[in-house]
Image (cartoon, rainbow, N blue to C red; front, side, top):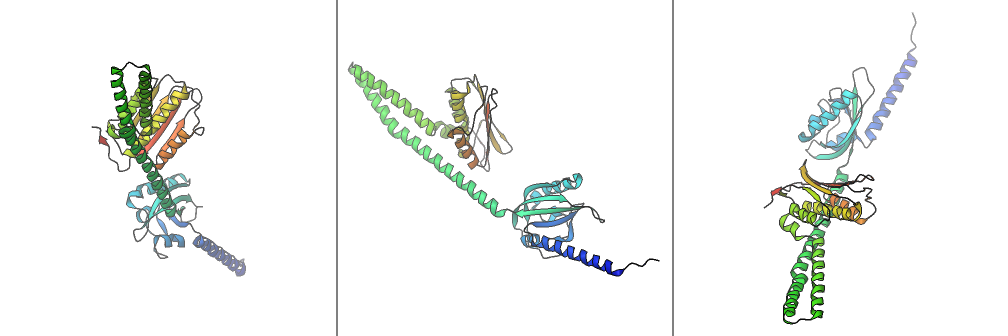
Amino acid sequence: MTTLDPEPLEDRVAELERERELLNAIANYAPSLLCIVDGEGRVRPAATNRAFELALGYASGETGGEFFWERYVPPEDAADTKRLIERVIATGFAAAQDGRWVARDARVIDVAWSCTPLPMIESGPLYLISATDITERKRHEEEVRESRARIVAAADGARRRLERNLHDGAQQRLVALLLQLRAARRRVDDPVLETAIGELQGALDELRELARGIHPATLSEHGLTTAVRVLAERTALPVTLDLPDARYDERVEAAAYYVVSEALTNIAKYAQASSATIRAQVRDGRLAVTVEDDGVGGADASAGTGLRGLADRVAALDGSFTIESPPGAGTRVHAALPLRGAACRPRP
């Protein structure tokens, strides 16, 4: 009978113990929030690191035994988290997403997290859930969004005030002067007077056009649909409209209006198009606005300030802005603007 030398076996056990301690130290000193779940999505006993326990307010040994999504995720997010973990378990491929986890004291933290299959062990499959706390990053992003939205709102307010001042001040004075000159012309046949009336009428038309460009009164008074119809009527080519019969938050309406206005201006200047289409509809809590033409395409969003300014305006409302303009195949400008809590109101 062969007798095993106990010393090499003891050395191997000691080496494995040192490796285990090293791995535990690495896990516990890592800044990532780590935990291990089994093939059902249940957290394994003593399988969370210190960062996980400190972030969520648990003592060592308190974290195992429950389905991950039932204990560490807000109820409204549990179904999405469960689906991701079960997909990883079913497919064997890692997956990641941003989400929210809930602490023992009901605090909610924002995390970027992933679920990754681990090598199979005798007791069954295991999966590593790893997360980074991005609560501060999310807070800063929200502060930036709110700041940009305030800037846009302030600029729109200034544009509205300027438009009203032009309408109620300079424009009204010019209209009064024009009426006086016309009355004088009826009494005196003077070519100089006739020329002055023509020049004054031209200046008044230009001032009205300028006021509309600053902030159209139609938009404030009657809403997006009416204001866009006015834009379409002033466009030199045929424009097909598909617009909702509703009012929205004034910031959303202003952003949508300027997207349409800039797109129509670019079509008239550069597209060599024979027609255009404007569509707007509410989808998934967003007002989606699309302007398309059948022109030469090849539009470059980086070539001018107008489209870049629109992208900034839409981003300030946490929306999305895209341009598709393949050469020879027309241009499609699309903006999706979150409606948030702003109620859609029937248009009067």
